Length: 159
Image (cartoon, rainbow, N blue to C red):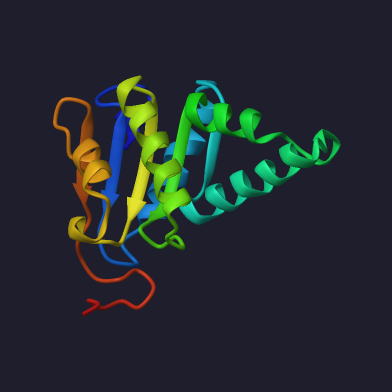
């Protein structure tokens, strides 16, 4: 994680495991280290939050109401090109065809352009999009780190 925050290693990092393993904590630590090293902006949020924010921007774009926040295009471009994007809780989002399409396009864009991206998930690979798993498991551009052990919140293994 420290090497990733320093810009070393693969540009995509998948933190995988059951709840309570510290995936989000580790992702936030990467973001803080990234910012302390002045490596550029960070966008953090759950996948569901990112998709909801995009939808809200799209509504504003249709109404031409730019005063109340960024347009869809501005937010979409920032998610695609920001120096570090953290997608927390992949697989926990409300599934819609539109959301799955945007998420796939976002991860694909960042994968193709080798942009720093951290993804956390509790979901098993079979529960996620095959295309997204394929990119996250790509040993040429991604590191898949499975965290195991007792829940830090509960202090015991979760079934």
